[in-house]
Amino acid sequence: MSGVDFPTTPELQELEDRLRHIIETILELAIGIHDYESVSHSKDAVVARVNLLTAQLSTLDEASKRTISDVLVPREIIQYIEDGRNPKVYTREFVELLSKQNQFVNGKMHAMRDFRDELAEQIKQTYPELTKEVDLAIENTGPSFPKVKVDEPDEPSDLKTE
Image: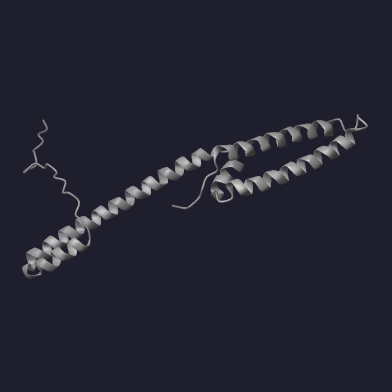
């Protein structure tokens, strides 16, 4: 395993609460900036909100480093989010790609084992004195896949057209 300990629910809840407070501060800052020209004490309120926001972001950064410092997020997921796409789409596409690659590799393995078994059979028939060595080679390279019997007619059927 990777040894990554994912944060527990209380730790995530703390980060979520901090984010909510930051959002509230940003909204209050936006209101203060909007009223900046019309209200005389608005300058002090804006400065206070900027200082509060700076402190909140700093504590959020420290808390996030303690909580989720070992969690690595692939750059592609960050790009998906920045492009306004759902990161679950990336995960789904990634799983589908891995599934296709897995099927491809399994097909190659199956073909190679079938080839190995056919080659071994031909070598045994042609050189019976090598039977022990061929059997040992097959044993050392892994088990064979079960043979799938395909029902084929002995003679092709004649299609009659009238």
